[in-house]
Length: 124
Image (cartoon, rainbow, N blue to C red; front, side, top):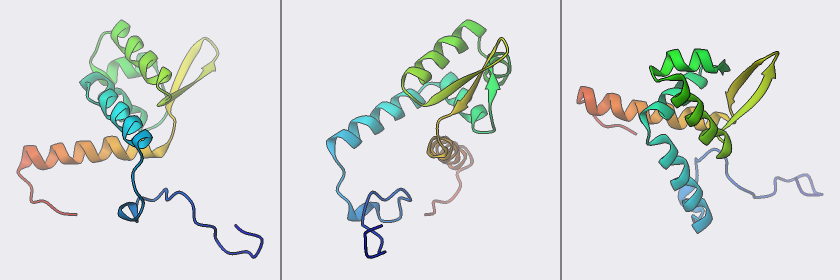
């Protein structure tokens, strides 16, 4: 807000007017990096499960149908990329998505898959 109480134009976080704002090289680089991380079946499964709420490695291993060591390695990549957060709960490490944008991105990717698999009509 400005000193007059009017809304100051800033970054649009809703995506509603994305065509009105030019995309920067930095945004494209970061977005490409995020999408590259999502381009792995195990990481996508982990992020999908974390979209439902916090979980530990045991829960995430069961949800992804991957080996525990593989899950741990994927979680480390996601944590280093800043896509997931961790907290200690006694001896357990609990993982969570960093923000809802990522949950929605995973959900939309899975919606695209539903359309491709089911030959559903396109829509906006």
